[in-house]
Length: 359
Image (cartoon, rainbow, N blue to C red; front, side, top):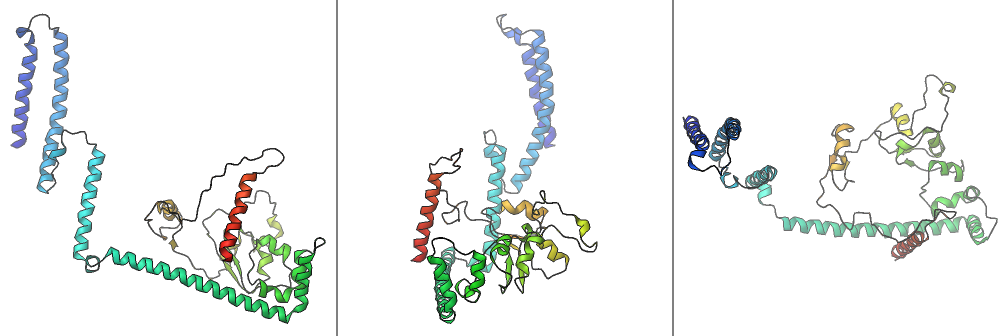
């Protein structure tokens, strides 16, 4: 009945409006230029608008009644220039705010939660964690120093080799040769080596063995590159991402027919170890993206949504690990192919960090 009354009211006003326009010339002189053609077009447009607006208006009234019954009042925004997107965002904000407040009130842990106390605990944890790392760092330095002193007393001949080579101005022995001559004291001075697989074969002799070899970014290491490091150690840790692109073999010409038909050389050492069935451990936490949306696509389409990501509380930070230092340098595109200003800045940064580390 309400829609019927509304329809009748609109039709009644529509007819009065049309009659008023049709009889316009009866009330005004000929200075008002309205002819029969204009009236016909007005009539047609009114008919179109009447049908379109009436149906939409009835739907709007029904929708508003439903919203009003749910306690949602939108009368105040009608007739304004507020964009519908802003209205939707405002509604979502209000909805989720009420949703959050409801659960906070009804959950004992959340209801008793104090952000100030929580932030204070976080601050204390950070301070103690920094102190702990500093203590372990100093303890490690002291432990290595004692090992070095003991090794120097035990292998005086090898100490003499190091001092002699260090004092030379020219004709120094190759690194590989020096390592072979100081093999016993070597790991007391430098217990850890970091090198590419190619450098391991270039600088470290076959008679030098490691406790463990660790491959990082193993998806980029070919089996042929890894062999030199593997046979120098009794155990290996292979770390990498099987979903990354393999190393390029564009410039290689490998004839697979030379290998046994039951053994195929795979693209990288990670796939090679996976093929022989060694035990695997998958990492599930991804924390390296400042914004977790950066990993969302890969997590869905490559990792089957198995990664646990963490939303970031900030978009940028002074401690994010990346610092932009603008240097007004110029790259020499001629013979030099250098940028002196940038090179000097790099040296200054290194010196600054060496001083901080030594302190």
